Length: 300
Image (cartoon, rainbow, N blue to C red; front, side):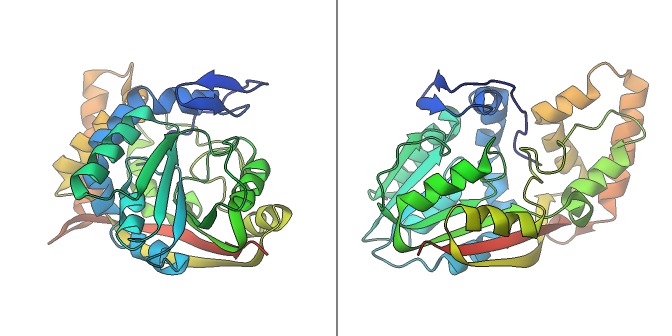
């Protein structure tokens, strides 16, 4: 339901598969190249279906053109990278992510689709050596909330854009506004220890829930014409409650939640979860609300 949000207390950059990881991002890189990366790679088709109503908002806001040179930050298994490439047919698209597993899947998908203008880099965008002014567009679908130093990350992204280049990304609004997570968490709370999603502003899925903070970070990075707009769309969670629960139980985060509780309590927790999800079952499956910020900005 959420990408990994582990934090690290490292004080210096480290080498990792694919290059250097920024201070504080080592745990995120480790998770992306371990169980979390494996899980989200397997879940890619579900992820694209889940976000099928949100992704068009991002692509439209980005203003992609056939000749666009694009970088996709936190591209995962390449869903948005490939979607951008299908528009930027005469340009180029670079997908950047920490997870080697997800990038391997992304490369396979790009090759199968014949999208030769697509390349991928296993790297931490916070410290990656982008060539200055190399891109017309930077996009991200829920990939910019995990930076240990978002100010530095957005400054580096700004430097990678040409003058007049555009940034467009989606990030989550607050947990209470997002039933896709608050509904299952609410059902499970009496039975398990819920995961720590981080202090306000700390790296994690909701680190950019404050629109004023987004504006301040982007202005500090040198961006102008900053716009932060709320978008709300249903998220497809699964075919039925059993399908959603089965997928949820595969998540490393969920395995940690259920670790150490007895079989009876586990059964009660899952029954409560199925009951909460049943109220959101429709003809297309289980749908829960998703609330995001759609952010755009321009490098002067």
